[in-house]
Length: 72
Image (cartoon, rainbow, N blue to C red):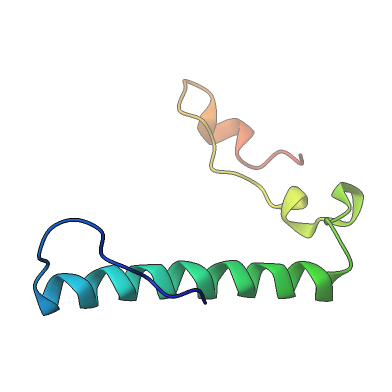
């Protein structure tokens, strides 16, 4: 990570620690996402996405109790 410099103001040690923690967390999250994308072999194929087959909650309406058992 590149060094961070304070250009204006006089931040307290607590403020600096907070900013550095946020910057480091964001950098770690980006690195983890990049590694996951490299390890997964690219984007997920929508035809193989198992979450697509999950049923959602029935929408409110007068016939929900009857249609909740229907196959989707």
